[in-house]
Image (tube, rainbow, N blue to C red; front, top):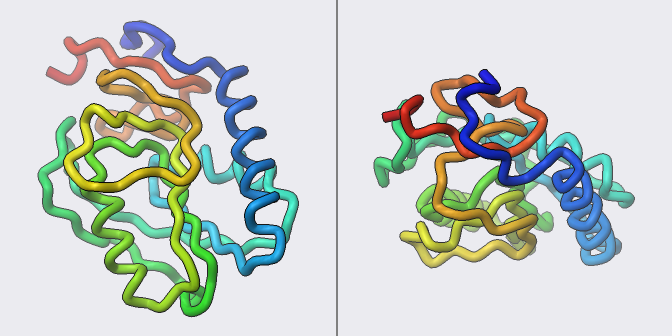
Length: 179
């Protein structure tokens, strides 16, 4: 598994610092609000678990699973909800969509549209990784951990064919693995 990584882009230590910084900023910005963290499964689960422990105010969590990739490495452009929220916490809440990577923006654009129809007080986006050069939709993160180059990345929850999620860092996968 480790031999499939071309290079480490974000180390364990850097990830820890990013999450602490984001948690502190979210704590400050949402201190008097009804914060609901919405994790986009499966990729954001590791980030979400670490992030919510760094948020020092009351919040609730829920999960959605959506897909626009299938088993490929590029978005199909068609987004489908695989698992919707379990609760009706959206109405009047301050939603923070927690995402592992903001790449094309297609998935998040769709999610914002779907969740906006449920009458939240606000919707913002927190992403660990931002890849602005690949953006196809007009979506920007309100909270972004770090920008990364246009490489196929895995680790810290991100996968290729359901593998590599358990790597403790973000690494660029060797092209030979996915081509």
